[in-house]
Image (cartoon, rainbow, N blue to C red; front, side, top):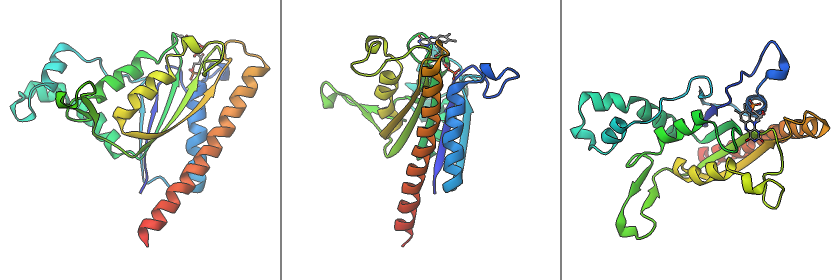
Length: 231
Ligand SMILES: Cc1cc2nc3c(=O)[nH]c(=O)nc-3n(C[C@H](O)[C@H](O)[C@H](O)COP(=O)(O)O)c2cc1C
């Protein structure tokens, strides 16, 4: 049984009248998915395009509802948390999280941050206990794999590279991923979009190649785990 939760977050569509406007990150995520489907089934597929349909931002009332014990919440507070409950349920069911994101202003899109803010929630995805000293937060979910597809206009955001100091996309998501229950994370990055040169073409081609290959590897691993638990 494999559940894939697929979150896209570019504001650009996957397919436009002018193909130059197509979202790179969404298309690379699609390559991953197509490749997975070629070699293994997906028992449950959950899709959200938060770039086009963003979750609403959290509010003071939202925080009030979160910190009210579940059996003491008013109808309005339950209503306030409905989307968060649904998004957390989708996350909880997932074995694989396929997340695609552009770099906007050196970090993630506000729309994707809104999704994280709805999901990283006390007593749902983490708990808090001062008895743990200086590390009071503990994730409650575990065992998930995150495949992160990123796309940026510049380049060189990895360790030791020219733009390392401006790299607030992958490191931020990596930090948050433990509250999604992520234990294994892969990143596939497409770079140089703003240069629109051969480096960009090569980078996009490599990202598609790597996405297809990773999907084959992970789907084969899932198949082996499923066979092993069936015998
Ligand atoms: C509002 C906005 C902000 C951006 N900021 C950055 C940035 O800080 N660094 C960067 O390398 N590219 C930046 N870019 C370029 C995008 O990351 C790049 O176009 C990427 O391919 C977009 O993802 P998509 O093709 O999936 O839509 C920005 C693009 C937009 C629209």
